[in-house]
Length: 334
Length: 264
Image 1: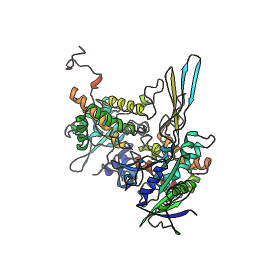
Image 2: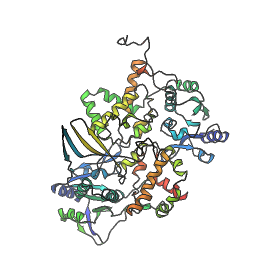
Image 3: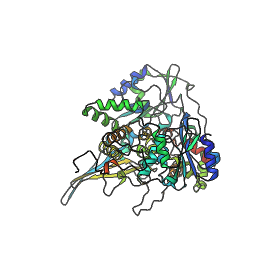
Image 4: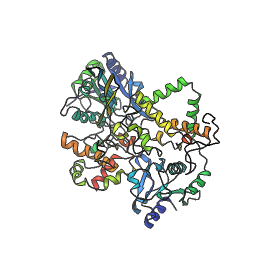
């Protein structure tokens, strides 16, 4: 059972000040032209008031869109190699939704699979998550179909849930306890969890049944049919809190160079293009199927968890509304 | 007759293999839809924003056979420009337009498309025009700062490129790695080179549909770059992309009556 406290709305100022005084950067959803994006803030007043989700996910905090892995200089007969050190600093991500908080675990599955990625781990160690339960939802949401919930504590160190008088604060981890310890006077212990304001979201599909069915659906024309309107960009993968595929790029001239890691997407036609010219996924249908299978078949098979948290960011970001929930439901019924 | 009725008719007679229109999408929105059966055609209507011409050059769509396309003016301009660039043949596509009386009309020839377009003047939306004027009034330094800020948010997902009807290259220069002309990573230089190259490549070819900006997940008004390039070509060469299926590309065509004297 998590430790539970009451936190008044006015206390957030004190909490932000205490986190800052502890040397932590606070990232939170802020408004920009009708969209929400994660930005550094110093006070709760800067945090967006009315958001379902940020457009991009919080994965960029631990897995940035571009990062240097190493650099080198070349001289005749000599190579000098310098490993890059991750620029990790104490960071609190405030106000992300429970779905997205749960996404870090899916990233961890890959970055600590058979090799411990020092960049990801250094940032994760410095990261604390203050999640915010959902009091609203939209048509893209489907966390309850993939094991989550609008008030789920999974992935958060501290989960806030709006109540009539402020917030219920559930302390989930030692990192959460450490944040409470920075300003203990702000937190009043409560005996019962009031999560009555959390929005209800009925499950849209039977995900275990879908996962069990996917192997038999591999050759179904369904995927090509669904993918006809897909334009093959990487918006879905790049906003996804669990999409982890990356590309390695070398930027070099005759004297020096650096090796960079950048986001990549299985939706791109060149993602699986072989040097021979052969492309095992040479149609958008095959690539769309890969996206579904990787999240709902390969991930459970390989890591014992799903590669999707049902946040719906991909659906909202898609220029042609490739609604993931709807396509999964269609596959369930196929 | 509405689009759904027309679509059913065209699919039944076999005139086309698919009809491209719009259907209801998420959260009350509209989205592109392919109908290949009467049941699917039932959902189709003209109401939607994306430029559907971007689909007709996709290999998955070409394989379907002849397609009918719900066509607002930007779609017609894109189709004509694609014909001018020899990417689409008149017989491959059947544009459908809705007349003022609600009737659906086929524009089966480039000439019919050109004549229809001539009656609907091309206009940049007021909000875009306002921002373009604001940018034009800025000093070069302010404008540079504006675009640096905007482009720093680009994640290089290529939604703009993928949504553009004129970005049909099977192998884009951005993806070329032997040699690698443009840095792939989404850092300052990679983003700037991508968007500058794209704007230049669309100068004289942009049909001003705004789909690149509409597609951007982070809301960068990236269409203003290509609009600006297109307006500049119009001002200097007096022609607009998508006006005709027999348009010579302004930036690679020499005419004896060109007003520029440097080339003579």
